[in-house]
Image (cartoon, helix red, strand yellow):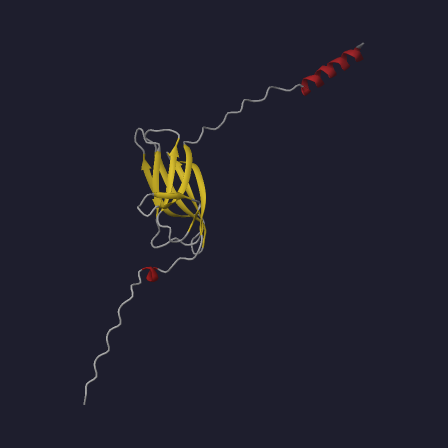
Amino acid sequence: MRLAHIIILLLLFCIGLTAQSPEPVKVDPAPSVVEDLYLARDDGGGKAGDVTSTFSPADVPIHCIVVLSKSGPIAVKMNFVAVKVAGVKPESRVVSAAYTTRQGQDRVFFTGRPDGQWVAGTYRIDIFVDGKLEKGLAFEVTGNAVPISVLNFVPTKPKPKPARKKN
């Protein structure tokens, strides 16, 4: 009899161990304030043109458009980061800009421009909202930069040869 009680208690104990407890409620992290992030070439008039993630060294400036899920005063900061660029320490900030939106604004337009042209390589845009990293976007600059001296080259007219004196 005593053995039967022990077996029953052991079975109840084992059943209790195998019974599934309710799964913990998963709490989703706060949704990102950055709804969309994209890059564009300049349209030639100083505004964002074609959306792309590949640029040439002469694509100056590069436009960065941040679409926010909220409108209202929000501090937005953009960092252009050199990820893998010849002659630049990896993860170096190349360009930084910040803007605080006003009530009713849900888009921020940033531009990034180097001194001269972009150096070919891999870059990333990091977007911070109220000091917190919200989103990143990688992009490439491909091709060779044209030296600035060539871009500013203006051919000159040859000077006429001096007339020879007759003896």
